[in-house]
Image 1 (cartoon, helix red, strand yellow):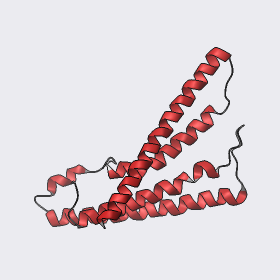
Image 2 (cartoon, one colour):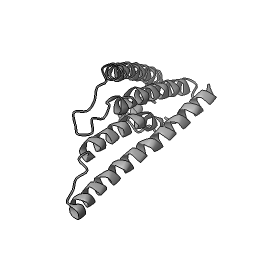
Image 3 (cartoon, one colour):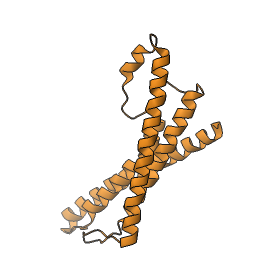
Image 4 (cartoon, rainbow, N blue to C red):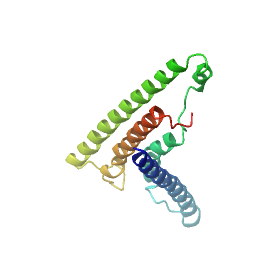
Length: 165
């Protein structure tokens, strides 16, 4: 089990790195657009669209990494009650991980349906690039799936007593 948890942690770290590269690419694209407009008085015409895609991809690829690093918003005030009600807090944390995993699984399912419908119908962007929408949409179920796996890993680690909090 520890090997699986370590592997998923490494996978999420790698996807977190890719997420950061997407943000960097979006910044480079925006700076290039500005330079092109100032120097050449010409626009790339795709900067807004592709920057939006990059930010969406970055968001979904980074979900599991942020959970790995405990970066999502949590109600830590409940931890103040841990000394008085340790059993109730433990049960609440387990239930919370289960609900979060169910939500991430549902998001994976819905994201895959969206991707598959775009694939079936050959949906393309209405912008000048006519980008096939399957390209940015494939990252929705991928990101949600690794988030689901990370929640399961966190649940298992917590139940085994190997958690940071």
